[in-house]
Image (cartoon, rainbow over all chains, first blue to last red; front, side, top):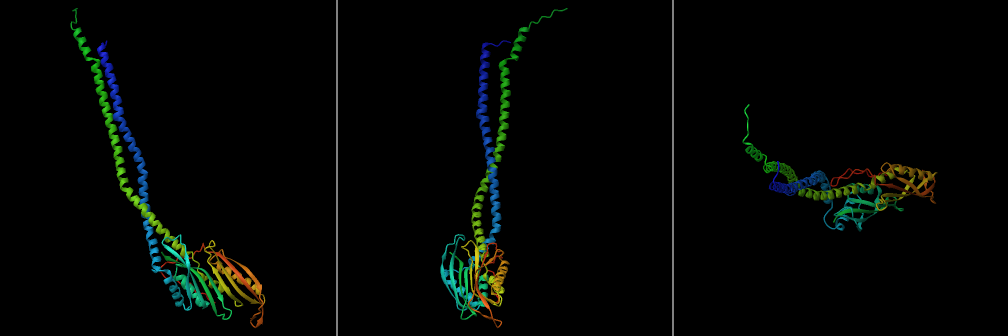
Length: 183
Length: 222
C-alpha cells in the first residue's frame, strides 16, 4: 500500500498534533493534579504531628488542671494566714500575743529589715528581732514550740539564750526570725 | 471446467483501500488513546480528590484544635507557675528548723553536774544550709573534762537522730578558776563551748498544713 503525498502530510500533521496533545495533557492536566496531590500529602504529613502535639498539649493541661486545685488551695491557705496591711502593724502584735498566750509576758519585737524574695512571686520577706529579757527556759521552750507549730510562715534564723549570772532561774533570749508576707 | 473471471477486482481493491485507510485507522487510534487518557485523568483526579479530602479533614481538625492547644499552653504555664509557687512555699515551710525539739534533746543530754550558760543557734540559710548550734557551759566533777566530753557525745547522738550528718566539736575546753561544790565536795570545773553543725536540707520533717493546727512539739524538759 503506497501512501500519497497528501496522506503522508496528513499523518505527519496528525502525529504533531498528537504530540502536542500528549504534552498539553501531561503539562496542564496531569502535572498540576499531581503536584496538588503531592502538596496535599506533604501538608497532611506535616499536620499529623501538629495534631498529635495539640492533643498531647490538651491532655497534659488537663492532667495539670487535676493537680492544680491542691496547689491553689495551699496558696489560698497561705494567703489567708497573712493579714492585710503593713507587716509592721501586725507582726509584732502577733508575736507578742503568741508568747503571752504561753505565759511569756515581757517581749519586744521590732522590724529588722525587708529581705529580697526572688523565689516566691507575690510574696515578700521581712526580718524581725525579738527580745525576751527575762524568761524561764521551760516557758520559753513551750512558747517557741507553739510558734514553730502555729506559724509556718515564720522561720527562726538565729536564737540566743543567755543564762543570767545573778538569777539562774531566768534567761535572756533574743531571736532573729523571718516571715513571709503578701506584697 | 468453467472459467471464472473476476470483473470487480477494481471495485474490491477500492473497497479494501477504503477499509484500511490510514487516516481512518489513526483517527480510531487517537480516539482510543483519548479515551484512555481521559480515564487515567479521571482516576488521578479521584485519587487527588481523596488525598485533598483527607487533608481538608485534618486541617479542619487542626484549626479546631490549635486555638484550644494554644489556650491550654497558656493555662498550663499559668498553672505551672502556681504549682511551682505552692511547691516552693511548701519546701520553704518544710525546710524550717524546729528548734524547740532540738533544745529538748540538748536539755535531756545535760547531766546534773553541768550548767549551760549560753545557747546560740543559727539556721545558716545564708551559709549553704549548714545550721549551727553553740553550747556554752560549765562542767564540774572530779573528772570535769570527761563530763564535758560525755555531754558532747550525748548531744551529737541526740541531734543525729533527726539530722544524721550532725557533728559536734569543742571550740574550747578550759579549766575554770572556780571550784564549785557538788554533792558536798569541792571539785574541779571546766568551761566549754561545743559547736554542733548539721545540714537541715535532707530534713524528713512532715509538711505543716497551713490553716490547720498541727500537733505541738513537746516542750523542752529540764
